[in-house]
Image (tube, rainbow, N blue to C red; front, side, top):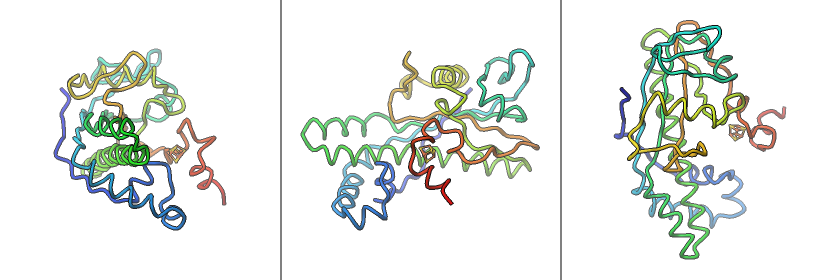
Length: 232
Ligand code: SF4
């Protein structure tokens, strides 16, 4: 049965909020310092509305040449990305992270009140919170694997190249069966609360980390951050 972590320390900085808006903090500080003030306001207004939860479990892996990977012998985990990257895993950790709906409501309220700048900054805060939760969980799993003398892969999420949202989300939700009061899956593949993320991480004695997430990101052909990384 899936476990839930809620007592997760989240300390925000204005730079995190700016990155959550897709901006480069160094550039913003020079060209539009007013956005830094807005990011700080968003933290004052919105940080207390973040209600973190990480629903997770670790599963044994069995493989079948025809049908692919099964978790605990029951739940199928399939997709080109999964077959390529998690085939060597002895165990697979699944997680859904969410920040609840209160901050999202505040984002909408600010927009409704005509304060679009604050609404966007709050949206950046919410994205930063989801990223922090995902990072917190990945680090926890990595440390647990190291303590057991094993390795872990990077986190693979539905929506990455080779594991579509339509394919991956129902697989993750079927295996974790989260409380719908915390997070639920819509037929579109979208999660509610919207500010949530799901992932799979492989664990094992022989497993490779798999490279950088950008390599598998469906936005990598148009993302300037990825292109910057690739440019010598
Ligand atoms: S390509 Fe990399 S930096 Fe760009 S959105 Fe994807 S994961 Fe993020």
